[in-house]
Length: 98
Image (cartoon, rainbow, N blue to C red; front, side):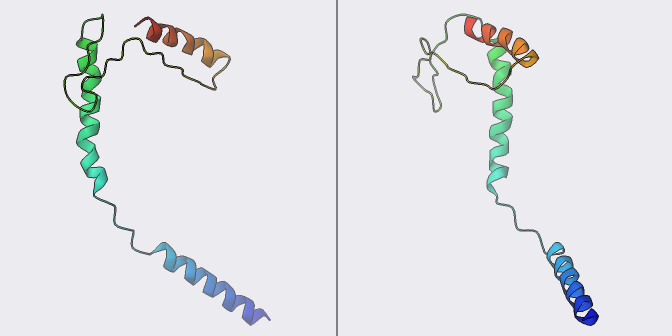
């Protein structure tokens, strides 16, 4: 019985070692294509910060060309309460003023 237990343990350890040493799956090429879009998105807030405060103009190009966001209401549900909610409420008020 002891021999069977040792053999089972050895086979189990061998299987774990072989599965841990398997070659990693090839990553898809799509994330590399998304990297420039992320950089462009990171640059967009800087451009928005430089824009004068006032009425928003519809986008002239891109996926949102001709979309006018004025008059839209955004409802944002969150699970924050207590001290987190106290810090979040001024941010919400600032967003609603813009």
